[in-house]
Amino acid sequence: MSIAQRVALVEKLFHQLEQESAQFEQASGLSCVSGCGKCCTYPNIEASPLEFLPWAFHLFLNGEAENTLNLLKKTQSKTCLIYKSLSLTGQGRCSNYKYRGLICRLFGFAANTDKYGNLRLATCKIIKEGQAKKYNSTDEAITKGLHVPVFTEYYMQLNQIDFHLGNKIVPVNKALQMALEEVLHYYAYRPSPDSAKKCI
Ligand code: SF4
Image (cartoon, rainbow, N blue to C red):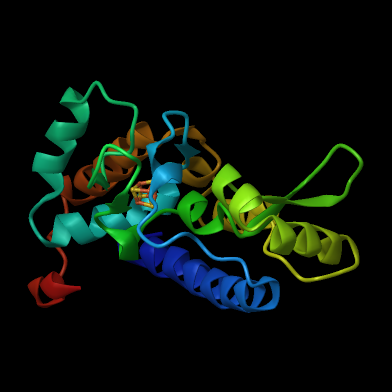
């Protein structure tokens, strides 16, 4: 499958998740604290290269893929390269939010299955403690059937697009690097996609 076809399928999956997440956010009343980007600063975020293929393709179309790949190869930091810190107290933001990965879209507003087979909302300490009442009632509502996006279900759907790139879970900066390498290798011996797409 071509890069463009895989990108379209990943974006379709993201769109599906956006709709599901919006319904869940509305039902739960939970929300991120404005300006908080703390979850992006965790040094142990892991992701698959495939979920960053739309990001890598976007950079490629805008002539930024090679420079960004070089930056990733040089960086010693484990924090996601896309994260831009705005203060020392955890304020910050994703500098390419539109092209964030699947893990970024799921974390906070999706559930994992615990060892007893029950769905448990996977969210951050800031939401758990700052919105404790809503968090507890949402957790309980999930056990009674409130619909919530589920990590494993989304990753299974991602794997079906490209098992090789979707099933590999690596540190986030490695995932970014592998996504860029996939796009650059693909177009090394093929004509570049239509330049009309340059402003995607
Ligand atoms: S891609 Fe954006 S949202 Fe995802 S971890 Fe990096 S900075 Fe955060």
